[in-house]
Length: 280
Image (cartoon, rainbow, N blue to C red; front, side, top):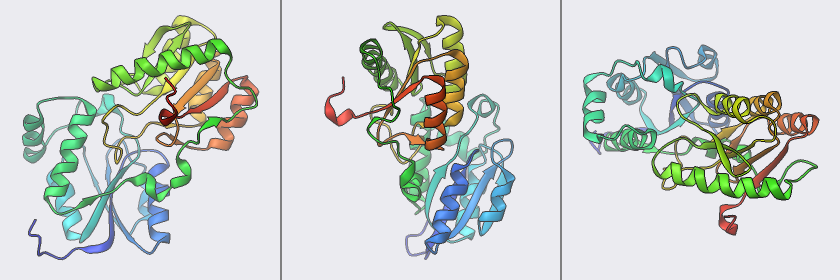
């Protein structure tokens, strides 16, 4: 993009996946006086988002040229990503020529490598990439025990072990969630997502599993932050998992009060782990 080409700094380009997060970002941005131009994806994005944005483009994953042309036409100044993309569905995308060139240039196929390359591509076009969570700062999970019951001594041991495993796997760009029991790994998150990982782990290891979610080391925190919510607690309750630990300040916690109440009913403890306090 020609740097002299003017863009509307008040127009936010929203790359929207599924769930409530894109709605929250769009509403907050518009409440702050910004126009919002959103790109959604067939099979991933809730079409109801059209009602809360100023401009809308529905396309398919992998159509990078269409996305960039739309944002330029809308005079977008900054861009953010919000919402979930189904990774199994993403495997079957049809890439346009630009996206294919980007994939070949990256070489690595991990989530972070591809997303960082996409951010770089957007920045070379003159867009400023910002963090979607800045539009909903209350979503960041706090430090400390959130439930009446804190972790037992055994659960603390599993939290520390799970943290170390999650960080080691994160260095390999593998998942953000691990489930452990008595310092044994029951399941590691792959394409299926957190809730399915919990279901698989509790089916294999039985009651008493401990769930840990962290940011990957070196991850660009403008994109793909770990997220939790009531569905996470429901999956844990169904499998009788006992404890949830997440990286505080860097994990998005949706419907947190509802989740805490559901955890209390199920006897699950929730704790925000502080990486700056030498938790490990």
